[in-house]
Length: 374
Image 1 (cartoon, one colour):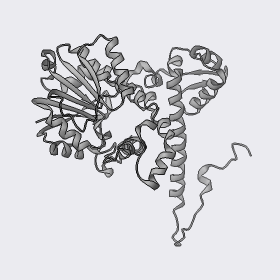
Image 2 (spheres, rainbow, N blue to C red):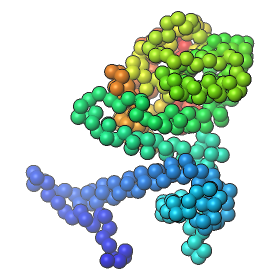
Image 3 (tube, one colour):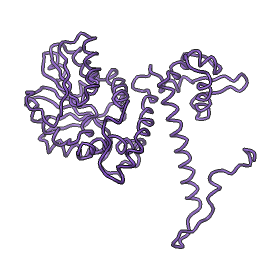
Image 4 (cartoon, helix red, strand yellow):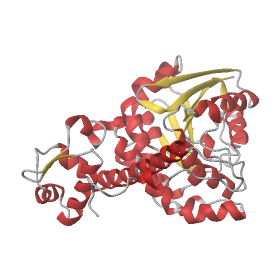
């Protein structure tokens, strides 16, 4: 059978009748089947884009004219046979352009603008790394559907690294010049000197950026992962920071820490086992004139309101495969990634915050920025 005569996926679905005798609309069946084939292709593309990011292939291609696969492989320092197959995948996905005359490949500058490390927060290739991370625990999560419970954080080998890379891209571009000014008067207070804390700090890059920019202030990062904090401490040491430290801590209790002029949480609250308890602890340990800056996922608490949110399927997928299940593995509430602005505002109010504003930044389309005061 030639490609020209091979059946299109849609042609496999003739008019059908359900077990109840009710007829099906064949056009709707075919449309939905076509959409699923599209999802299969898109998911496969995402996986290959992740590989292109991790291997540095996009970075190598962006600096090259049209090249053959051996030339691309040589530039990237990789095995040609794998590079060739990857280039074919990227060609059929319309990510890379192919010239059949000389069998060369080229990455258009417009594509490189969102695929290379030079793109900073615009680098969508880095975001694609979540797809293979989720796939690694699929069997564990399937078991949870039947048995309950959750998947512990220890099962997610590279999660801290990927989160750190993505947050660093945004924070390097925007934290000091765009995020800090979202809190009125914060920049001046940091220059004069206050105590700051970051809840769920991961590898601590945001803490170190703040500590380096505002040497009169002191900062502490709290996280439950000693492995992540080892990376944070190494960066602080490399930068010669005497005003940043990191502590392994369950942030459902901040007893003994004193109070802070600034507490931050970057995409961390929805991951907590007991987020309401954590928010109350933050409120209790904030100076009366202090501010809580909470960066968290931009979504609605109402699934219907998320229908037009382009990345909503990803939010519910990453929730199922990581955020919700990790919380449940700790006997937690399983709040989920798409807890939404409405619930976030209600929980902040319940924690005792009387003044809350919500803002967005063009550098960070995924998140909303909540500035909460007493």
